[in-house]
Image (tube, rainbow, N blue to C red; front, top):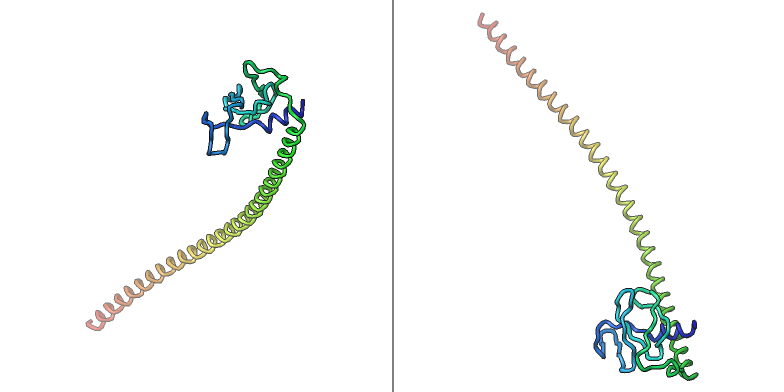
Length: 179
């Protein structure tokens, strides 16, 4: 039964619409194919007639689906010749090798992205430290600036007092000189 499921899964193809030649994904639906909807998700599926009566997994939702047997067809009509089984086996092995190579490529991409993420995280931490240093620098200089303004205000007030005292002293001296 496991061989039949594997054969059925290899033969199952997702069909995006009811056209006989779906050039978007290269799927060609032959007159002998069984076309049906997944009872779980409603996704349109097509399978070679030799998959009739087999249990397969839906390519969309992954649920187990029983491939319907068309009216008038008998299970005895579905016997597969050994040469056909061998062809399917070789095709399955080639597909598996392609998918394994693709998986290796994707794993390499993931490793590269993880490395880049770590590098960007370290850069963000360094920038955060620089921002904190700049903030402290600005606060220190703002504090110094406030102290300078206060000192300048006191100096201006002192100079104004000195000028007023000098003016009052000059007036007193003139008054004394007149007297």
